[in-house]
Amino acid sequence: MFDALSDRFDGIFSRLRNRGRLSESDIDEVLREIRVALLEADVNVTVVKSLVGRIRERCVGEELSKSLSPAQQVIKIVHEELVTTLGGETIKITYASKPPTVVLMAGLQGSGKTTTSAKLARWFKQQGRNPMLVAADLQRPAAIEQLRTLAGQVDVPVLAGEPSGDPRDVARTAVAEARAKGRDVVIVDTAGRLAIDAEMMQQVQDISGLIEPDYTFLVVDAMIGQDAVTTAEAFHQTLALDGVILTKLDGDARGGAALSVKEVVGKPIAFASTGEKIADFDLFHPDRLAGRILGMGDVLTLIEKAEEVYDQEQAEEAAARLFEGQFTLEDFLEQLQQVRKMGPISSLMGMMPGVPKEMKDAEIDDRELDRLEAIIRSMTPDERVNPVIIDGSRRRRIADGSGTSPNEVTQLVKQFREMQKMMKKMGGMGAMGGRRGKKGKKGKKGRTTAPPALPGKPKMPLQLPGLN
Image (cartoon, rainbow, N blue to C red; front, side, top):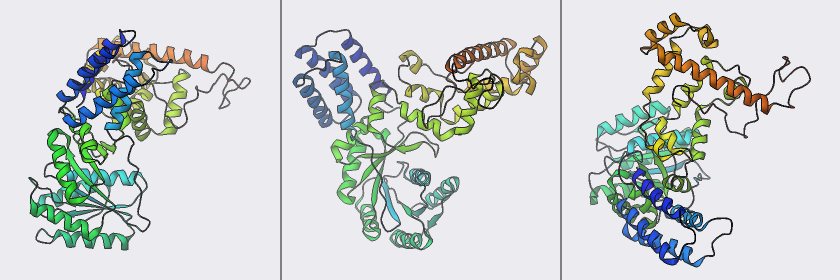
């Protein structure tokens, strides 16, 4: 969504880095370019004016840091002000002292509200909570079935009323039932509307008055641009929102809504949905998004994705084998499957700092990973453990079984063996002085421990043979 804006900022800052001292006219020129880039990204004009004004005030008025070049200081200021515009801090969810914590979901029809309700339920489960979903959207019978289907995927119960019933009664009954059954979070999915109409706004306002929600979230489709801000303003006048949940942040719209909501409405973006899968949902982190917009990557989100899919003990064992030269193609296949759970390779590349723009822009087809997996799966167990035995006839058999060519099989095996040698050499250097007499960690001669990982950070091979 923010690719075009990121490209504009990259061009602006590249020219800026080639300059030494920055005069006031240089700063004005940079700010003009930033203003145009933000307006082209469909950011609200009032927000643009405020953001550029704050950046100029700091650039002109503050003494440049001795540890940074003037260009670096300007980039630092732009990053900090972007974070402020996006909301400053990540929202901290607190829970009712007397359960359940009640969450009211509102939004226009088609914004992804029902799907988002299920995603939010999954998120609460990850926090150790015991949520329940409430289907109070009785306008569309299909919405009730949709919520039930999605709730089944995350193993959360749903309380629903009859299509002919009153959603106000359903919501009120649900909160009482949740309290009786020990459900500590209740998420009420209300009816969406095709446009902001008085009758439906009154209905959601009545529900809010009856259940007295701890949080009221407005689900907004980020693809609709500035209309998202208009919608948020209208709902806030009726419901006193606590936050906004942006959906479809993985789309190809210009992204102005995300940069405008906080300053225009005065309420933060609480969560963001970045894909169609139930797992593509998390708290919104202003600092991380600002970093990605400015091409700084998003290492924290990358680590969190890895921690979510990786088994820590399994990862440690794989890393130890890798650095000791005992890492096999069977191990690599397991690691490859874990990486794929983290999402499309192209999206992971966007989170890595320092990756050249050409690589980020390159379309990395995930079918390439299918090819690698097919080759390995076409090997026998002995061939995966000891690929050196793969001769010409074996190569042809593996190629036929995987729908590839013998040359592709040769390339994968060659790159894998080179990685083995390199990692074994690194492991030997890291383990100098770490041997315990004649026996290592597990009592085997010459066995050494792998270099230590950062606390809580799973270790995994960063290279993928066949893709490098």
